[in-house]
Image 1 (cartoon, each protein chain N blue to C red):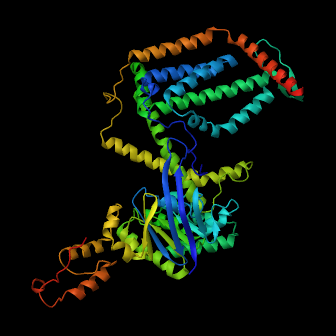
Image 2: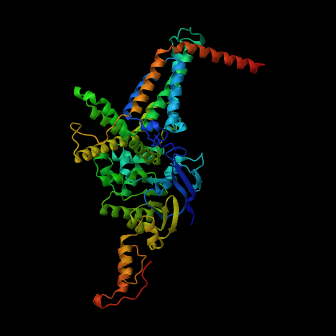
Amino acid sequence: MSSVIQVEDLHHTYLPGTPFEAVSLRGVNMRVDEGEIVAIIGPTGSGKSTMIQHLNALIRPQKGRVIVLGRDVSEESLDLKWLRSRVGMVFQSPEQQLFEQYVGDDIAFGPRNLGLDRSQVRQRVRQAMETVGLDFEGFKDRLTFSLSGGEMRKVAIAGVLALQPQILVFDEPTSGLDPETAREFLARIREWHSRQRLSIILVSHDMEAVALLADRIYVIAEGRSVREGTPREIFSQCDLLRGCGLDIPQIAQVMYGLRNRGWTVRLDVLSVFEAEEELGRRIDFARPLAEQSCEPVQPVR
Amino acid sequence: MSQYSPFGSITIGQYLPYGSLVHQLDPRAKIAIFTMLVAMVAFADSYAASALLLAALLVAVHLSRTPLRFTLQGLRPALPWIAIFATLQLLFYRGQYGSGTCQDLWRLGSFAITTCGLRQVGLMALRLLGFMLLTSLLTLTTSTTELTHGLESLLSPLKKLRFPAHELALVFAIALRFAPTLGGELERIMKAQASRGADFGEQGRMRFVQRTKNLLPLLVPLFLSALRRAEDLTLAMEARGYTGGKGRTSFIEFKALPRDFLVLALVTLFCLAIVLSDLRAIDGFIVDAVANGAKGILSLVAH
């Protein structure tokens, strides 16, 4: 499988040589393969946002290499428009970047910047709107600023999807959404991914979202990549994550609690469904719980 | 420097808490001195006066322990403007300079470069440098809290004339407080729009209409966010019982020390000395000396 993104020993310092100098990245390594969903988790200020801004050359590498789709982003001759149409960047609270009066025009901003003609732009806007679940005819002439927060976020995301990128980067996609909308949104990301073989990078504090979507996880702390692995591998290292100021998904916490009370249950469960299966295997629901003895186990950690 | 950090290179308005002598001065004294020196720099009409003022400023910068290089970096964004003004002044300055007569160096129709124009341009550059140094010195060594309280305290005698000193200081404080916040916001929006293929100022420098249009994707979200912040701030202030300046006491009380008066007196004396002495006379001398020196060097090189 070929990799679409390779980050090698990336360093970044803000305002170097001034009294406000701040080191953000001190050696990040990462690889994203085609069609993969990779999550980046790390505490606030760990450099996640700085790192992802290198992926479409909003920041150029100061030291280290970033290769995106075979091109080195530190190349001066790099075609930025091309790169930015290939790597779609959805920032945190993207609804705050809307500016056009009408929904359709705002979504068309990206495709127009690519220099596409009217019919192509229209086609892309239609597709993008349908992908995020907005009816094209019903919404294209609505006033952008009369929409609800959730609808505005959909419009903003459609604005990025209309570039038809191969790689999508989401920075905290579910922040500020109610649980219902967040769940619906995550389901959509998964659906786009399976339909279009997109490579997706997900930066999030929402461990449930990460557990649900990610194929692989990178843990970043203090500007370095600390650990890499599948969600099962990462989320069974509770101590490591807690040491970084992170946590594991709630359902995994339940399993830890059970294990600490003497139940030999698996710790690497990622969903309520898996937990249910695991518990069903352990507990004979036909007999009252009190009569069931638990197997003796070593205390965890 | 990243092209998306609009205020990354602007050093004015950032406070460096170094605790030097300049930092410790009473902010009211600093504001008074600042006002006085700004006037001095603005009205300095000779090289000698400008040079003296700049020298004094450099001493102050040194005392404040703020890095001069950092202060000068703040000049960089202003350089294109300085160049434009300098060119205009060079081409259109028709005034006299001192008692000396002007000589044409170059003339084409109504455009002319005269020796007077040349001198005037040099003065203007020194003046701008002086302003930049002054403003960044004040803001680098004085926190915004000190500045606004100092301003309010200085203006408070006017309250008897129903002058809204407190409100004015508050407006000033909020403006200063939110400049970096909005700067950060602007950077964020710029990056988001650039990610959608927008292009800022990289091409078509002369196509003003297009360039202005290109700013809309930045200005609309920026204004919206500023309005949103203003609303939040209003709510937060009212929720904490803010009802305006009337009967409001301050947490910060300034107490002027003898050294504040001493510094103020010294600076006043310095300014008076510059105003009263005939520095333009020295100026002609300096200019002549420089010209003679240049001639000397040229003839040396020629040999």
